[in-house]
Image (cartoon, rainbow, N blue to C red; front, side):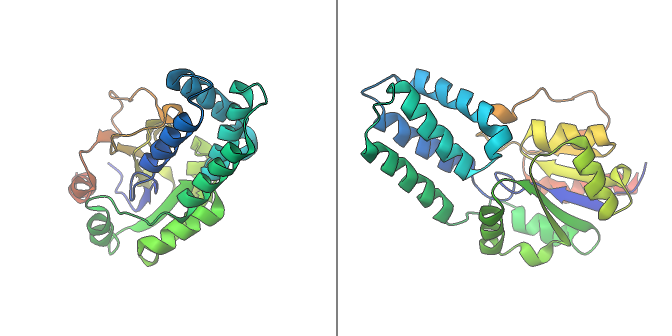
Length: 234
């Protein structure tokens, strides 16, 4: 078995909390629009808008806020009060200012693996927001490289692992999203390690490739160094 030389880490909801702030904003959104539609209908309409807009706005807070505004206009038949739009913009700005909260074992796992492996942060979303979060996390200097991408696909992973290592066959990606962090690196020829967060955006959900020999699921990042040691030692 090829030894792992490069380890990719997802950022949001793998190293630090993220989705729960989106859920809190969605709760506020539902309260603001309660006079126009029920929560379930509103959330379904919002998800549809997010799916439609990914190709234009990409991933992250800004696209989320624009999708909320679009949904508010639709469900109110263009009668949404300006005050509601203002509150949605303020909620997005608050999300962009929210302090970083590291997940359990994130710092320890990175510190344990940094001396022996190339570590690459691979994340998608707003460039400025992701740079801010990485700076606030205190983890930036522990990574050998940072890749902020528009989407995570097998060719993207293949290119990253070629630039920062010996290719995908000697690389492992760890993250909370089955769709973005696990399946594409496996398709590229690497390892995909799933560390569930508990809150997952519907767009990021996918079936686990449980039969694939390069798929693993961990309870938390504290188990990652032992997994790497097992792969490298086998």
